[in-house]
Each structure stands twice: as C-alpha cells, then as structure tokens.
Length: 627
Image (cartoon, rainbow, N blue to C red):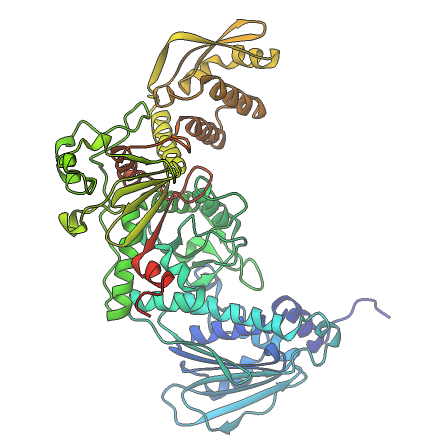
C-alpha cells in the first residue's frame, strides 16, 4: 500500500481556506474586493454575531451570468486573469480564484445574482464545499448578494480560535473602514444585528471625502491633517498626513493604499517613519491616510494569499519618493496652513464647496532672530513694524505713554509674575494684515507667550519654539557646510576626563565641522576657542560636555545622519531661550514671526507641540457664553 495519496477535493479546499479564511473579517475582505472589481457603486453589509452566524454583502455591480454561477464557487476559477501577462499586470483587487471556494468549504454559502442587462436572476449554494447545488431562478435586482452562515461549522477546531463576538465585530468593521477609504466613489452601508453602524454616501468632492474620513477616522484626524498630492516619474502620492503633534499611542490610524489596495509593507512603513523621525515624540505613532498610484507592472501583489503584502520592483526609488514627499509636506506645514485649512474645511462642510485647501506660506518674517540667536528685531522694516505695533501695545490709563518705545513696553507684574502688554483695540489693524500667530499680548510666568490673532488665543511654549528655530538653522548651516562660528575673546578652560581628552585628540576636525574648536590643554583639561555663533550665549562647558558625551556614545561616527541630527538638536537646546527669561513685546513678536517662517515649527526637536490655538468658540464654550 502506497504511503502517498491524493487529497480529497474537500480537504484540499479546507487547507486552502486556512490561508485565506482566518475569521469573518477575512471573508468580508474577499467578498468586498469582488464587489468593487464588479464595478459596484453601492454596497450593503449585514452582520450577525460578529459575522460568525451571518455575513451578507449586497452590491449593484455587473453581476454573474447563469453559466458562471457554479463555476464561481469552484477553486482556481476567476474572471480577472487569463495568462501570465495578466498576472504581471494586475489591475483588480481579487484574481486568485480561491476566495469563494475556500469560504464555501468552511461555511454555508448562498449566492444570488442578476447579470447586467438581463431580466432573470439566479441562485446557487454550497454546504461546506461538499457539493454545489443546481442553479435555480430567484428574485434579485442587477448585482450580486453573497450570504455566508455558520462559519467553521464543519471545522470545530478552527472555530475555537475565534474571539468574542465584540472582538470579531471590531475586525469586521475595520475591513469596512479600509475599503470605504480606498474607494470614495462607492457608497457603503453596514448594519450589525439590524442596527446601522455606517452609512457612507459616495463622495463627489474633497469636502465629501473629508466627511467620510471624519466618519471613519474621527473629526480630530481631519482637523489635524494636511491634504496634499505629489507626482514624480509616473508615481502619484496623495492623501491626508496627520500633524506630528496629532500622534497616537499605537498605529491604529495608519492606512496606506497602493493602486486602491490596502497594504502593510516594510519599505512603505520605514519611509513614513523616516519622514516623521525628526518631529515625532518618542514612543508615538503617526496617523495618515495615503494613496500611492503606480504602474501595475512595477509592483507585485501576488506574494501572499491574503494580498496584504506587495513587492516593488524598484524598492529604492519608491522609498526615496515617499520619504522626500512626506518629509517636505511635514516641513512646509506652517501655522497659517493649519488655521487656513481648518477655516476652509469648515466653510466646505457648511456649503458643500469642493475648493481645494490651498494657502500661501510666508517665507519671510519682518522680525527675526539674529544670527547670534538673540531675540532682536530685524533691521529690515523695523520702522513699519514699530508703526504697526504702537497702536496695539500702548499701556492704558497712562497719558505719558502716547508713543511708547516698543522694546520697553513689557511690564512686569510682581504679584503674578506675568509680563503684560495691553491690546488697545483689535480694530486698529486690518484683519487681513494680522499674521497667522497674531501679536503678543503677554508672557505667562516667563514660560509661555500669549498672543491674539483673528481666530482667538495663541499659547506658545517659548523654549520649545525657539529650540526648533535654532535647530533648523543649525541643520541648514551644517548641510551647506557654513556654520558661522564665534571665536571666544578669552579661550574657555575646562576640566575633562582622560577619555574626553583622547576623544578630542582623535575627532577635533569633526568637532570643528559643527562649529566647535576644542583643543587639548593637558592630560585632564580642554581649551574651547570657538563655538557656533548661534550658541555664543549658551553655557560653553555644558555644551561641550554634551557634544563629547553624544560622540563617545556613538563611537565617534559623525557620518551617520541620525547622529548628526541628534547632535545638532542637543546643541540647539543649549542655544535657545530658557524658561524663566522675561521677554519684551518686540522679542515675543519676533518669536511669533520666526515660528511662522520656520520649517517643522509646530513641534520642538523632541516632538512636543510648540504652540496651541484656543478658538473663540472654544473659549465661549468654556465660559458658557451664548448658552
């Protein structure tokens, strides 16, 4: 008797089902892909007991012809591909021809369909894949209804691995969310135990799309994301990229679609992480809904039975395109974009307008930090700024202050520890002339800057904001190999360990590239001769010790980009204004203007937010105004 034998068709189908059908959500994914491939513009989903007892999907696609009804439930039967050329240029979501056969082998399946342009509709069923029933007529409109009952009824061992009804329902609804995001042109309705969960109409404009994202991902994501679209070398990347300050404790708001197919790919995830690495708080995860369109023959989707993974033919070019595009979108985001986007989005939602969220970003500031890092007004347009501010920052009830010196208008309140600058009248300045972050009105506890703009109150963490500004300037200078240095009038002498002295001897030239000229002055002493001009006011000894510590931890490998950024970030922290330092009104406004014109200024080097807007509506709600 031979030890090798052929598997029965039922057993082989059940083995195949183990690759495709893991839980009710797996079934729904396969069936929804068939509906979308059939050209459906409306899909209705009914669920009972988390999809284990019943999962019904009804669509208005082209339907299935009578002669194909039984064949649709057979293994390796598909209408998507015919030869090898089709396999290498796949433009449909489903193509393997295993899904319906695998599902019918572990459940009770009923299929009804009315083919496009025909009056008659037909029905076929299967009980555990044992045999497929004869095709019989039924009442059904154009389209297809797939009904699955009693999943794993004939494989109880696999049914034991299913989770609770609530957990399985969560997986099922996640599939609905993904497909709803992948196809804005299709209407989705989902009911659980007869109760409506989702009702998402088809989208005709960007405003409609954002309403759907609101329903699927939450309104906070829409309010804290940037919409963009970028093309390059036959590739298009578009979608909504969450602000770095809108981060998550887990990656539960990350949707990436390649040619309409939701995927989780290591190359893609690495590119996204790299784009966020300089702005995201440690341990947090970004949120995004992104769409990549690429030539189908440049991506292989036939690498996994569930089609969750893909393989790109030009991995490096894909990675570079994703990283460069996303990092540029994050870098270009300015306060004006955030507030303008929210404002236009609110108008779109109220009027149904489909206008694009487009805003011009200010590239120059009338007041800026000097190259030394001190908070001083720019020599350019100072007269115009003084004229504009004089009407805004005159202290009240003081006849002697008719034309005050703005640099001296900061008043220190001893009791509260608050510097105030009264705002005479918002009407003194035209609304269109007010910058995105407005004008400073106070400094709270010498830590936060309070400002007023057209939207409401702006609260700025002055140290975090200035740290990002100095960091971005150091990065730009280092990349251009032109860090401006400041020789010390008297070289600074400091004690050091033998290990630190040895490190300086080996890496003095590398340190000089970062603007630090450090020399050995003895077995246990160092001499600092010059520092970056941006950091000339910092604590020289603390700065040098931190740089040497970072260098020794990294074994002196200054060539690594991540280490370079980490080192520059540490240097920027030493060169930024510290909490507890009082600022004049001119200095506070200089800080606001530089935030508006600096890349990635919405978060500090460590990913913490640098400013927050409290709208008038939020403040009115806080104090029950109008209620």
